[in-house]
Image 1 (cartoon, rainbow over the protein chains, first blue to last red):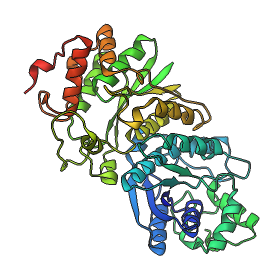
Image 2 (cartoon, chains in turn brown, orange):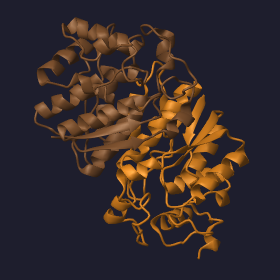
Image 3 (cartoon, rainbow over the protein chains, first blue to last red):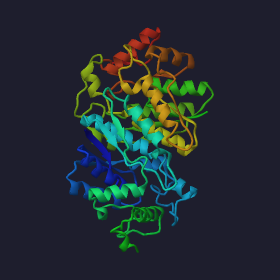
Image 4 (spheres, one colour):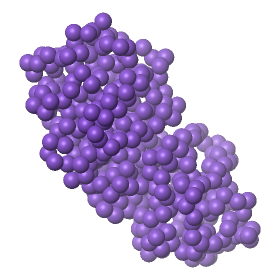
Length: 220
Length: 220
């Protein structure tokens, strides 16, 4: 099958790319610049596409930062507090309806390329699905709407939607995913900060998976 | 109810805005610049918001023209043939998955504003639903996914989805919609060309509705 994959440059979507290729699918990667705080993740995505010889395109949606504003991923005046996610951090790190926006553009790209499906790296958090737009219900509903949005149905794949991050890291290890090319930290420094919500999540997931993160020795 | 309306500046979405206000809803209008061939429609949308004192925002998605390319609404090197729509014209005037893209951003805006719903002007063509993403099945599926994309469900309203354009024009006439402020023509000249697919559709719909278009006397 020919699949457009949403590739952020993090572990989840990078493993998704390797997973789909391992299953024999042809992959086109779409990376979104929606005004993230740093460029590091985008550069990682480009390196991963180069390493895997994957056709890819960067989609510039930075104008959305003006539309929504007020969240820490796009509004650089908002500070991200260190520590594990809590309700407040979650609200401030959420781009409203982000996954539907990214999937709708990916579906448009699949239509224009004559591809069959799109895929995204939604998965469960340590305590279930923290983000509504990463839930199995959301993935199923997106698959329904993608079946009727064009003359030809497009499938929405979310093979990790019931997996925890540690499951993804185990699968990544089987697939030989180059962890050192991926990026999770909300800060865009040379090495991960080791203190933000995503750094803590990443390190907990590596621990759960019984594996070591090549980036973790580099924390500041 | 508080509703984010997708306003293009054409008759359908303008009537939708008036219709929702007449039903007592509070309306916020989102207008999308996705690289349309001309600015005329966007200026009309701004005039309509001014005339109705409607809070509004323009969303710049011109970067999407680079992502898709090859269609006449965004790629200015593609020529639109005069005459009624046919299969070929339809393919060339379609932005892939346009309505899902616009709705997903509108839903994000509704989430960030704390609004309850989004609305779009989907309706039936003279011979049924020409565009998949204007069909009742699509509108219903969007409503389903919008119910689960965030912690708080957002409704997707498409009150005209089973109406023909002539029905919309009759309703517009009841509501006192200023037809002279709306724009349909695919060309962006001072007056409508009178020959493109949308001009012919508009004039046929006015005829069906038994009304006259204040813009029609001005055709070139």
